[in-house]
Length: 268
Image 1 (cartoon, rainbow, N blue to C red):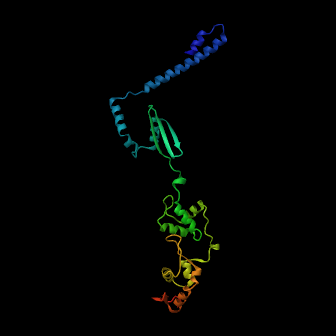
Image 2 (cartoon, one colour; image 1 turned 180 degrees about the vertical axis):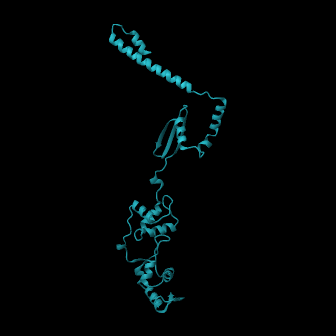
Image 3 (cartoon, helix red, strand yellow; image 1 turned 180 degrees about the horizontal axis):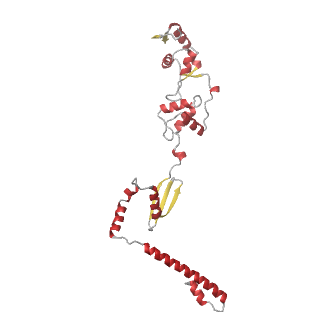
């Protein structure tokens, strides 16, 4: 022990130095005693495994996977096992490949290396498809969130998290992507939905659909299941005006000189 060597070699005439070295020596002796006592206590707690115990441990090792994934194996227990077995884990990120490489240093001195794709963040993983964003953006010019949600649901689309579209979720997504809501007060008065065209012309939607199918009236549709859009000016021009006037006078819808049968009057 170095403390004893220093004390043994000091000149007795140097009492102050000798006193300091003696004090240091006594401290080391006390530390040595404490370590010996600690070692003795640890040796008393060491349990010698019997051959049966060894076989049980080996059996557990062979079925470790089954035990690990068993429903009765608590998460707290798994964490405790990992802390016992693993000394440290080093992780490297390949930014270009977006790949993580793990090196596990086990307590026994072995090393394990494996790689995996970097998990996507929620902002990337739960991202609304671009086609749905385009539909919301295009429809928001003239339609409210409720109508947009109806069209998305009819198309079988869901939100980024797989939920059914509704008015609230459309509004949230629209705001998230900076898409303005429809301004009803400043909408294009020349564009009518089928329902609005019915009110404007005073004829049924069935009549207007016949005009559309005969390509006498043009219509537009932003997406499948979206409302049909008709130009008001198309309804005010010939031959539409004459056809509708004749229908209202006679109750008979005649298109291209072909009678489509008697229709009940809407204005009796």
